Length: 214
Image (cartoon, rainbow, N blue to C red):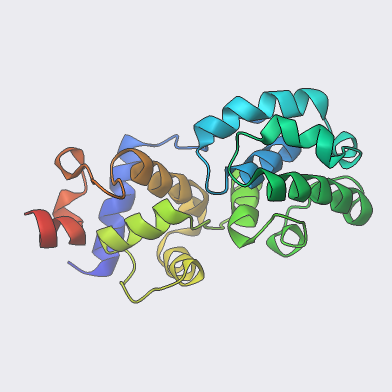
């Protein structure tokens, strides 16, 4: 099977079985999603969703968050991984949005990565989820799953390398959705330590399954 055929099989499978795949983070506005994604680094979406309502209630806007002090915000996110850094990042992000972007969350990767706590992965999430831009956020799930299936070679050693290959091979109009396909597949089926190959519909094209399990 060629790589092109493998991509087509995977895309067809997910279009049939997960046509409405979307982020599991709860949000109502771009500001809320940005806060949630910053908090989600090395933390579960479930934990983030338990934490953000109190933040959004106390700081409903970027302007409100920009006026927060460390001691006020920290107690609201202390159950999240790396709370010290994330507290500083959230306040710094809000201050930067007000000072450089007139209080509006920017919607390009180049602008977003100027914000404290925002790297390329976060910027890709924001632009693909909010604006459906053809950007592929590569987290640990996407990195693992794309390599296991064989969508990208094992020699693709960085998230950016994986991102470039996926974007090149997935139709532009589907890239924003494919991000969620791979994340959710990694979260619930293609687990890091114990992949659930027996219930995976990608067995016949999965390099890992064909090599290790068959």
